[in-house]
Length: 126
Image 1 (cartoon, rainbow, N blue to C red):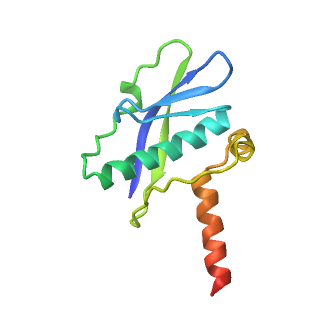
Image 2: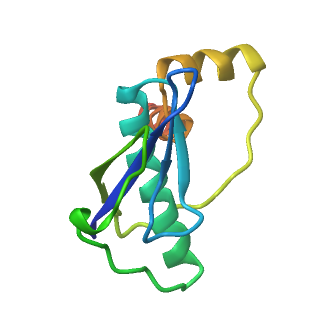
């Protein structure tokens, strides 16, 4: 299922970005750089849509980008997320702080890294 929503990117004083989705109250993400913020916006949108589906909550209709009015230090952009039919589950995991810091610095999605590692491990055990 494909979803496209306008997002507001707010530039913070430290050069990072805070991303909100006007049509999805509560859906917020952050990125340390613009490329990281774009990635995190897509990841956040996908996870939020999955959450709404899982909780059987309505998914709000997307506004047109021209109807979203950014203020000073902000810009708007469409964000695309493809939500697969397979339902995601949330798990709590612990990792060393150094790995967490480095993954944030590199803009890695821990969910994606874990999924890839699990797929590799399962494939090698067959």
